[in-house]
Structure formats: C-alpha cells, structure tokens
Length: 191
Image 1: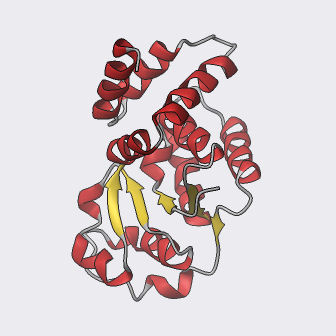
Image 2 (image 1 turned 90 degrees about the vertical axis):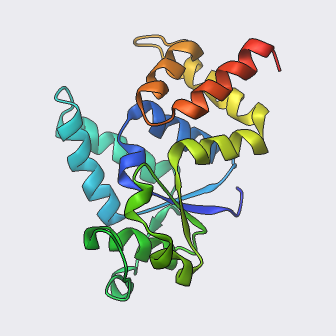
C-alpha cells in the first residue's frame, strides 16, 4: 500500500458512491486511509440523517466492513493532541486534525476545505484537500487504477446492477463534479 497517508473526513465518506470509490482506490494501494473513532461516530450519525432508508444495523455493517478492510486505518491516541490544535473555523473539527497528526497523515480529505484553514494545519505539516481534487490527483497519478476501480465497483454492484456511467452519475451528485467531468472525458476519448 502506498505510504501516502490521508485522514478521510466524515463528509467525504457519507455519500456511498464517493466512499466506495475512495475505499476501492485505497484497496488498490493508491493511498493509505485513516480515520478515528470520532469520525466513525460522526459517520454513523450522518449516514442515518442523510438516508432515511438506512437502519442502524446496515450502517454498523458498513462501518465494520470499512474497519475490517483497513485494519490499520483506525487512529488511536489522538485525544491528547486535540487541545493543542488552534485556529480552526470550528473547534469541533480539531479531532480530525489531531487524528491526522497522530496518524502521520500528509493531508485531510474533506468536502469542507474552508473548515480547515492553512494557518491551523501548516504548523503540523498538513493541508486540506477537497475530495474531488484528491480524486483528480489520484487520477493523474494512476489513470488506469482509477478507471479500473470504477469498473470494479460496477462489477460488484448486483442489486441493483450499476454501470460505470451510473456510478459517475452518483458521484456527480457529490461534490466530485470536476473529477467526474475528467473521467468522462477520458472514457469518451478512449484513453
């Protein structure tokens, strides 16, 4: 697995298509995902809030599958660092920065980049990047692996079956529009 370590913020993991792509790419070794128990707790709540058809049991299975697939993704021992994080737009996001520091991450992948100001992250050697920009970076690094991951996702979806184009449609509803546009251009050009 790639040594490039990133903390995935809760918001980047709520939409299932986006979370599936991020985790499929991590499974292909393009980067090393990290999260904390606080992110998992927020994620459980956010998924239930975002999707009225989800049950706590289904969410628990999803979160268990994440933790089982990436046994070393869960960062522990971040709590003492939280109070040392200053300059955040929202103090409730300090736990994400603390997990990134403790997990030796290089970046925080989030759909709320503005909540992670540079002056709060730079002293720790961190930066925040939007999910779409992160996916674009991975596409630039390994176009074949990203297209392959989309095909893999399509192949896994049986009920209901989904084409790559339908997965891209779902990703377009997330804040990953620029990424989707670039992938569609690649597919259309047959690159």
